[in-house]
Length: 518
Image 1 (cartoon, rainbow, N blue to C red):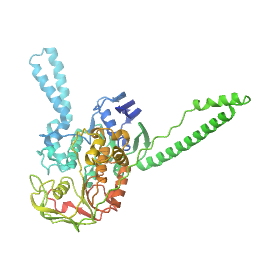
Image 2 (spheres, one colour; image 1 turned 90 degrees about the horizontal axis):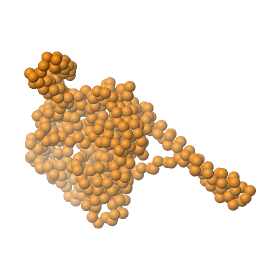
Image 3 (cartoon, rainbow, N blue to C red; image 1 turned 180 degrees about the vertical axis):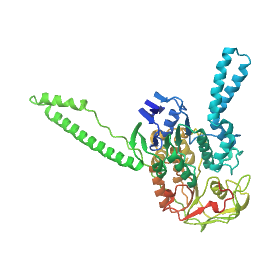
Image 4 (cartoon, rainbow, N blue to C red; image 1 turned 90 degrees about the vertical axis):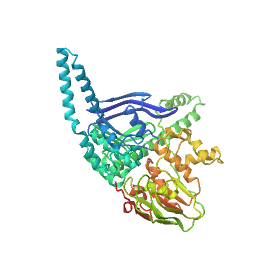
């Protein structure tokens, strides 16, 4: 029996179509990887099936009493809510039952005998459900999950807006675990997770008995947990049995088959048109020629899918800097409290350093302290001479109403419209993306806009904070190639070992100096 039925789904934004007559069925126990290039509509699809978006056409039907848990990459956590509040919100439906039970008790005082019997039955049912879902031990269950995910060390009463990206993801994962849903919907769950917690999530999904749909560009992680692939491309959704490697084989074979059929058909049409052109003027062959003229119109013409623009990243380099990029002297990083021991670090010209370690121990804070964006609690960070720094932030403020064109023009006011469009197109963005507001783009497309700013400005040092988050497979591979080619120095935060392998000259494990290891 299917858990979810999607029939004849069509959706778009303005004149940009995302889906066209898409149908989909999810069965119990299926572990699905939802893949596709940035901007193909993966997150939009999730928002439609969860009811956050209404489709233009089509029907979405869930089986009765199915509880859905959704880990959304764009979830906004409200200021004033603590980690404990978020985790306890997993039991929202139980608190609603309790409220219903209390209202029943209040009404019993005025009820007649017949109503009383009905109310007592309902009260008993609610009480049984509360007991079955461990309502009276919620606090201990919350503490248990908090310990498992290392949230207790952060402080369960900590405001969620003060957490790093990885810590927020862990909190939302904890909430999902407590919900025990019948189906998990996970949108880029590994984006802000460190290696340790990616392994933990992998084990959890491998043992997960119910169905889940996973959006991820982390191919090793995807391969290890799924048994079905749904590929989103050109407004279609195609099903493939097996992992990502198997999908690539079948997809390449299908593509080659379609291209061969297209070439044969085009040749046949050309021959027919040539025959008609040569024979329609002669009386003896005119009838035959006119008969053949109708044949191309009766054919089901094969159309090849438009090739998506492949991103091209080429970082512009400026003059060589001095010997040292930066030096720190007894630098203590943090906000209200220290995150590190006194740090005496240095980076020399030509080094490509990767910062690794758990979420929340201060990797991003170190980058910002070196740049002077976040004041140090003690000590100092001294930048070297003749530096031209390019900085890629992990997160940007939401709700940017600028179009991509405006965003690049603000950065490079001397550029012509042709130069701006060309620069964005080289990053793998289509005309429709370029003319759209930044806020309606997917996470990967927004990252490409930010990379566009970075590659078109000369630099000799790059400070990159999780640049692979949200990027699709092609963009990630191209970025890796471009960074290997880059002649300047690089300080990189990244949790994907396969990305920085062969790129890094040095790896700094931040756990060696961090005061907090959560």
